[in-house]
Length: 65
Image (cartoon, rainbow, N blue to C red; front, top):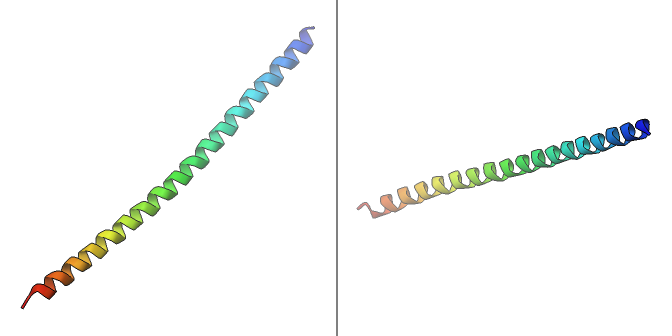
């Protein structure tokens, strides 16, 4: 009886550990995805600021006599 309880406990512990590792892997993958999205958004924002600056310069130059 003791052996089967020990085996069951070990198997359960292994399943819990596997579930924990899978959860960590999913969280890491999600973090990588979110970081990619954040970097892409930062690049788009920087391009928008640069373009706004270009347009502002053009408008100021056009307004000069």
